[in-house]
Length: 491
Image (tube, rainbow, N blue to C red):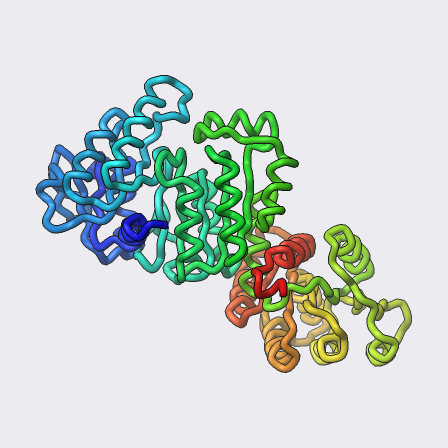
């Protein structure tokens, strides 16, 4: 990327001043929502609402034109009618604005001649010295820059290593919300819509050089130059893992992509094969993208040798089936390890070969952690996957104890004790641990129980242990992460 383009993008992601064009005083409108979103999110730069009507919004002066604004503006947020966008952009060029995000729709995605002509017009304006995100987009989210996309005020303010580019505004918003629960920190999220100027190629080129970004996700509906795009992906994956969700790979999806962002899609097998050859992980939805990025972010190992531990025979059977289908390895435990594991079970029927079936979903903490220690310290595995059932541990068995006149442990005590043991074992063995905490008892009277579930997720993630809601999601994430190797890890 040329230094001048990189400098403009840096100003867009970390703006010292931001101008918002549109009906900024009209509640519910895009421009009004954008102003309030930046304020609520905590943007500390200068914020300039711009509208011909003037006035005030949320205590801020509304400027009638960009010419009234004091000092340079780095980023313009444009939410005016489509026909008025070109003149706003020309005004931004005259005043040295580095870049603009155009939320307005009504361009090439309509398929109509007028919309295509308008998009061609603003693309020509970009050549005069301004970079454009959009049109038909939600814009930029950057925690370190203190700005957020529409609406975005409730996204995390904590920066992290994961970036996303998305042709879908709703997809970008959902990603930013979901990653908060998954324990992933974000460097940048860009909803770029039609991508008339800054498209996938430009944004990926920038992110490949961005020191704040370690892992990259992309939701794409179409790219204008597939060969150039794949070359950029190849360069990206030589440095950083990349996960791609390609939409529009069916006749129905392709038709929807054309009307959504005006993008031509392509055949599914061709795209997936090309992405894999370029070193990217091709996924089939938002959940799989997040599962993969969780594994990439948390796990040190990229190995496929896993140990499965859970309470119940069926858990071992179906997780073993999943592991086999996904190409993961379940090495049999040694005879010595199996012999040591058996001493914890008084009756036959438990599998101690891998997977390890503890028989009950609520095994007492001391013997359970002793079993995990045997596996982690003595077996040549890369990842321990521990499948727990939250409902029996936190509802069923405490209820039975109360019926017997016994006092159960405080809620969450079992999982807290297990966390302390796993932290110690991770440090001493250097091996990865993945938790699967399943909760299929979704009932209204368990609202407090759901809060406990969230608390446990966040406690484990804060200690570097990822938590998945289902075994399939965990195993899929581990498998995908093993494909996303950087060159130094392949050697």
